[in-house]
Length: 188
Image (tube, rainbow, N blue to C red; front, side, top):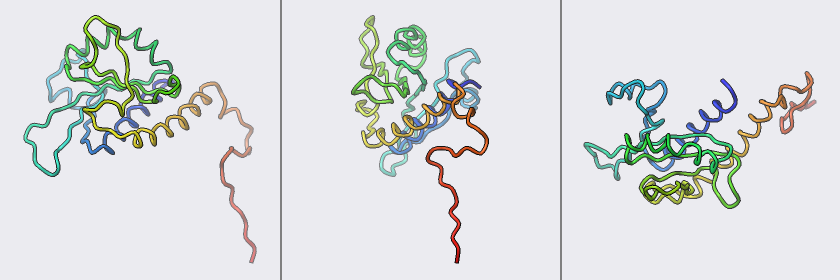
């Protein structure tokens, strides 16, 4: 597994955590889940990474509205969006209410590490754009929740990038890692 695949898996986990904090129930739907079989989706058909839904204040909902969410790690969201718009449009034809969440450790100035393409807000034929996750009103996710998870993105992803370049593994044996606490001997 290369570093970008690892970042994508971590991105999925972080978005799942944000959704759970926002009181969503979440089912893993992509890759190796059994949801594909339950929904009778062909093996070559697109499947989002997560299906999310909410129950309203303890009331039992017989058929909750499933929200398909596809999560992608990209270092540069705007160029990835330009390159992948046709692929995303094809997926959106199968999943009309899908949200594409892009996770990056390099957001543009003033933007979040978690950006969303809200298909419902994209004009037909126009280039797609992203909004920050907390700005998608239908999802009801608060900025302070996103901010906490952004801190994790900014801590974890640069370390993984350093590992890919040989940064962490290139240290000398026995060398102390920055920020690591060593045991202190107390004499009586």
